[in-house]
Length: 73
Image (cartoon, rainbow, N blue to C red; front, side, top):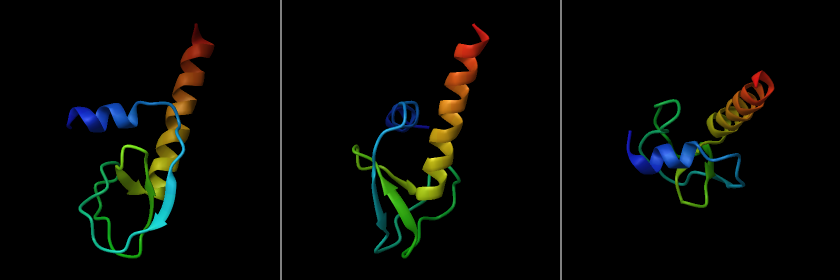
């Protein structure tokens, strides 16, 4: 996994632009499925794109993990 991707996905929840993909664009780094024309995507400020559902779940998991870790201390 490249360094940018790690940095992108380890930040706290950030805002993003929701859009519908106008052409195929490789794969979603979260679910590893192809990003296809017509998919609803999230475009982060760094311009990385993911399936909207994938990034929403990722941020929910990350927030839970941080909350759980803080609770355990």
